[in-house]
Image 1 (cartoon, one colour):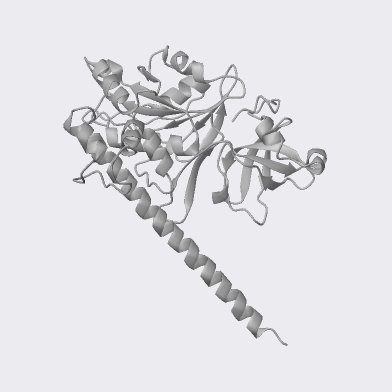
Image 2: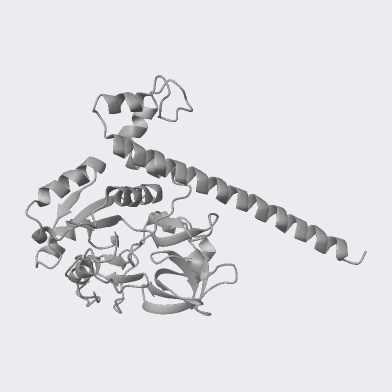
Length: 346
């Protein structure tokens, strides 16, 4: 995190956040951008420089993400209120279908990073795309290790097949030109983040963008996968303006409440599905299925259709579980209140 003072606009402040403030809040509270989330405190940047804030009683560390904006009381150094986000990346928390795990907030672009190696996986990349679309964040494909293959164009073709409208760049993360290739999405007030598996070059690119030494482990010779040592999300300044949120590699991406994001990631299939004869078509053997007709005609890839169906099924299952848990939680809370009320002296 940089220690230099910045204007609010330099930090990513915009009218979207300003209009959330009341006149009293404008006079008494200070906008602060979250750069690190700890168990009982927040590391933030304000127009006056870095600070640390305590959490308010109604918020936990899990409710706040790096990149969030909060309103701070300068007298108590406490975060008083969390502002509504413009965008966010989230996934279902491990073992809990009802809880959302925030990854980053208020980012302007996400670099979905993969490599010219066995790590390249369409199904995983489609999950990343769904996360971005569901959170309202424009994705950018970044293909690394182009120096390790004689045919990097074949990997670019595979990226275009799953994201024809998503910008895609191919680079050697260790080359001096790597940072320059990412600069079009960076600039004053802009925030970017990396998503991808460990060992694809995210930390190397993050170091190149920020000028910081963000540690990366030694590359394994047999499987070309590195050890990514980033274990917490942090926000770093980019020379020339802008911010980078570095994230750990994520092996599991559980999807919940992302139906629209999934359909946007598979836009050509979702559009066809609207032409099926039956509204509840499972896109399998039903008569009049526009999706299967396109597969038979060779217009779309059958494997991609199956991945779309799998993600939609997973999302529907997890969303139903989350809704059930919320309902049970509300019912239990209501019961507890009734019991407490009945035990009060009359």
